[in-house]
Image 1 (cartoon, helix red, strand yellow):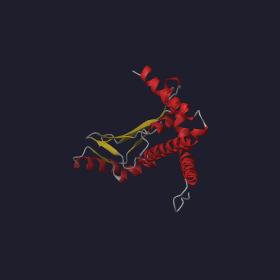
Image 2 (cartoon, one colour; image 1 turned 180 degrees about the horizontal axis):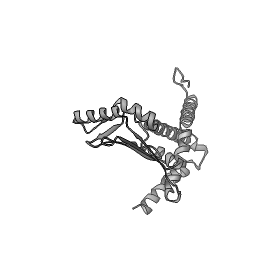
Image 3 (spheres, rainbow, N blue to C red; image 1 turned 135 degrees about the vertical axis):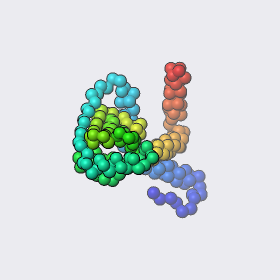
Image 4 (cartoon, rainbow, N blue to C red; image 1 turned 90 degrees about the horizontal axis):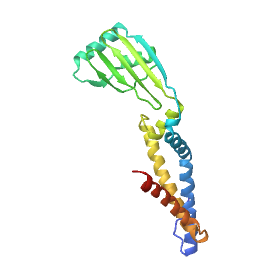
Length: 216
C-alpha cells in the first residue's frame, strides 16, 4: 500500500488520492474478512434454525486403571495440599495421554478426598475426566454433537480458547474497517448514483422497525 509523500494540492487530485486510499483499505479489509464473513453468515443461519436441525450426539467412554505408583502419588499429593482446584501433575498428564489419548494440558482439576474431576469442555461437544483415588479407576467421557454444533460454537466463541477469541476480535475490527470504508466510497459516488442513500437508509430502517415492532 503506497501513500503519497506530499498531500495533493488541487481538489480533483486530492479527491482521487483519497478515493484510491479508501479502495485500498476496502479491498484489504474485505480480503481479511472473507473467510470470517462466510463462516459467521452460514453459522448465523444454522444458529437461527438450531431447533430444526436435528443431531444425535455421539458419546465415547474410555476407562483404564491407574498404575499403583501413580495412584499412590496422587493420594499423597491430595493429602499434602489444601488447594481444592489445581492442575494435574505431569506424571498424571503423561499417563492419561498414553492410556486414554486424553490431553489435559494445564487445565484446572477439582481435587477431593475420593476423586479428581476435570471438566474438558470443547466446541461442538463436551468431555470430562474422573480419577477415583480409592479404586484407581480412570474414566473419560467425550460427547460429540457433530460439525454443525462445532461451527456454531466457533460462531459464539464457546470453549474455543484465546487464539480463536483473538481471531474474532481481529475479524470484528476488519469488518468495521470494511464497512466504514465502504460507506465513505459510497459517499464519494453518491452524486452520480441517486439510489445510494435510499438503499443505505433502507438497510438502517428495516432492522430498526423489525426490532421496534416485533421484538419485545
